[in-house]
Length: 328
Image (cartoon, rainbow, N blue to C red; front, top):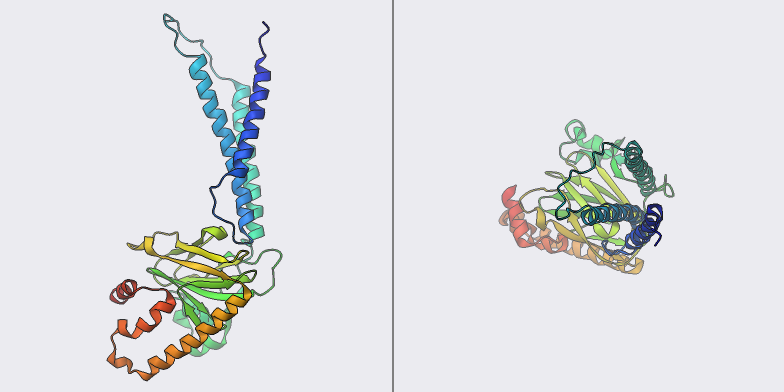
């Protein structure tokens, strides 16, 4: 019986490994539902890396199993193994292949980062007032109130900015986001609404101006495949387009203290009509709350009692409010 050549076995094994790794890499369910324009870019890159990882896993583990069987110790065989030292072609092969893969993934990742807007956040104009009210910023110590409200400046911004398609175009919606221990506060400058949840319309180009009051936080929306640090004294930016209405979790992905695990909220993606209704209702509600606060003498209230009417709208429960008051 003629023995099958090793080269043919290697070819068949290569075809099988390639087919299995590609199928698994494209049909896994490891990622949550895509809900932003940037998500397919990240998932495409992840699928390529996962496919390569599966292929390496099958090759390495398969080789180990074959060697365990083929070169196992036979009963009665007390001879030494063959004195094999080095294999230059094999060493070149297993060095060159990973090098090419790493370089290819690096170039691919830079392209994805550019398409998401990672190269375009710096140099966007921000008002001096916005920067001056960020704790720890140099402008907070040097600008007077008059200068802060009138003099424009350029803030050194980092993060995910405009994509190549939206470069030099203003965002449809700008939201100021502040991270505090242990909550996210969302302020809408165009309407004066303050909320503990992020509400945005589907299909809108949204720009989040992130800052932190105390320590480093990280704003992460898994369904959007986006994560950006919020830094004390350094404004950061996150710009994206939501593509699917729904409610998605927002998680702080940076260890920020003892209650880091509870620093969660949600982003609610509305249809344009639902968003307009939400905006109108909240403007009316916050005006009513303001009138109630004006009608009561603040000097007669404790800090917790003074802030209590606003905690529901901001998504902060009573325990978190109490800890914030005690901590400050």
